[in-house]
Length: 288
Image 1 (tube, one colour):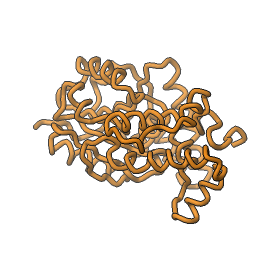
Image 2 (cartoon, helix red, strand yellow):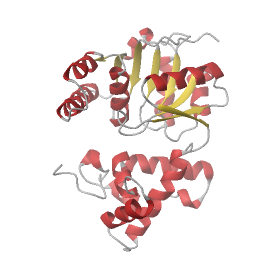
Image 3 (tube, rainbow, N blue to C red):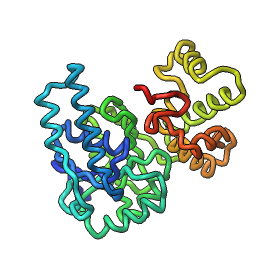
């Protein structure tokens, strides 16, 4: 199989929390990154967020000013047609099969035949998305974790038709980014979310039952179970809307009640209390 493995330019599609973090990570590793988002103003917002993040790293002496500037220079806004000149595309758009299908249909007319398409999907079948992409052998899951620049893990999700050279390529590339790639089979929730989402759901149930407040629930899990972050703060970090979406996929595909989203989660999402990104979820971030 002929695939492009010398990655100098990366296309990142979707510039929300995950897409921005992925773009920053590739840029910090010396790759030119072309950022695309269908939502007007989203790329500019993402670039501003990334620059603030880099400035904080410099302020905390975790990054030199020169390295931060070099990273910033590697980032630029792009149109979808610019994906004709990239060596890899990483898709991080909203977790909706229809949204991804439409994007992949457009990409099929633009991307060179030897370019790998990786998805940051956290719950949707990689085999299904690979089929929708029209290039299932060159399609793979590259599941990063939030915050992407800090978190070391990349779940390398192998679809039923993903070619072995593509798995090797993405695993090696992840290491070049300073990440630890762990190979998993295509399955609803993969490893991380299949284990994490029931924990978050049960944390919400404990809160809803009035057993303890969010801070106490999280402290119990941190001090008693050695978790670095409690389940409710983790849900706020991920985004409660994202958690709900993942749980709905797991419940649908696995058919088990432990994945049924708690009604309190649905209510909070409907109220727009989505966690850190809206300033309030189970905790209040408005003053931070």
